[in-house]
Length: 601
Image 1 (cartoon, helix red, strand yellow):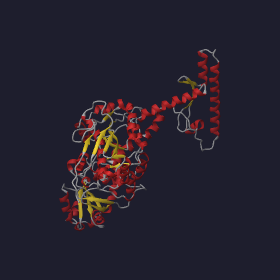
Image 2 (cartoon, rainbow, N blue to C red):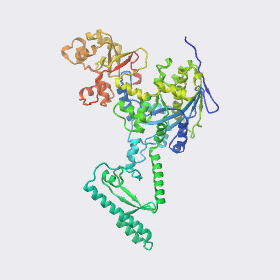
Image 3 (cartoon, rainbow, N blue to C red):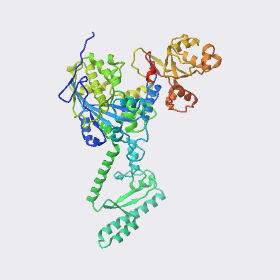
Image 4 (cartoon, one colour):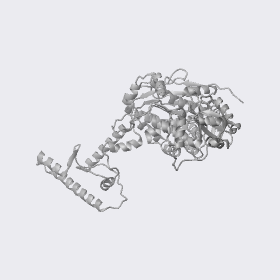
């Protein structure tokens, strides 16, 4: 029985607004107020049950075929997202920790302005990044202030870059832990250790003697320190020991890293404890400075709270590349690496597919509008007090996305859990979300094994990748319908049921609904003796064809040319020696609605 529903999105107190009444106040965080806001952000995350996020990058894809589409397996989808994440830069990171208690949604929205500034003068986090002209144009039209982004954007280092920066910055590191070397001592080791011990022993004795000899003038004391190689570290005497290998560092400290080792003289145990605290405070302050915005990412990771994203693959490949470390080469390793940092990820786009009106919608405002037919009361309350600095509309607009994601997630939970009387606590909503949707990372890894894809669109049919053929080099421009008509007259193989769609301006894909015709067609195209009639003329004019494995090889080898035809040509000419390449056939969910809109190219 079909029921009619009414939507209810109300406001509470003075800090909330309905979707139709205006915008929520989102706290804007820049370089100037970042450090003073960190404690507030940590408190907001700790006090919430979920975290919604939304990124604004300088681009998403460089060519039409670079977009993830219905023909992609999890591996090729990941490779496309990986290429975009490594190519484009995050300029805004909208974050919204939220809690859901019954129908009350409490949100803590923030919008962070980022820019990869090389503050350590060592080429990190980035020498350069790409921009998509259409994306920058859209941002400018929305009022985005690029001056604020460049001069006030918060910089950052990934975890991998932070480890490297500790040695590049030459800042002192306290050697607390002792790691015994597993390698047996050599004669050279024995000589080196003996020489260093003697030098340190004489230097230490000199420091003790200099403290007791108060009659020496400054010149004598300076000469003594010069002979022994003694220096000053702050107010304390120190000795720098130059090393030329990690092995020598281990022999001195049993610690890691090839660097100079500095020995500092303490006058007492109390002075030693004080010095350790000073170094730890210095290291903590330096870590906070170089981490920058990654401090917030670490807050999210350590909280282990479910993270809600509208575009899981795009968002988290960007987060991994910018804040964790280099992206792995395959989707399984990516899923494993990401799971260690974010074990619970809710892919809102997949969550939406289970609600019939949303099965073909990816736009947030359109999704909210479509849910008006359901009775799903959600009272939104903004807990943190808005924007401390006045920014134009462009900066406020992106921060709204994270609030809308949290609101849409709350409404979807309420709709799925239609009997609101059974919802007693946040744990009920958390269980509802995590049953099927909070394990997108694990799900992605499982899907990668059998290379099945899930494309949520109308009139979709599952087809094996063995039945797909890419064609390019068409002599004349024609519509997909006309191309299909031409092909039907060119060879007997097209007497069977097939479909044809353009991938971009340079190439199209043939879908055979039966096994066998794809191999027959490829064999004919690549063998002139089997050609006759119009197909021979098309091949003479430059028609080429390749199976799905060639497409996967182009993605795997990084042939990201503007035209898919050029990438496929390179893939055919290359020798693929990758031992991990998967040649098993894949299954694709094909839809009749996959035609390319050339206005978007």
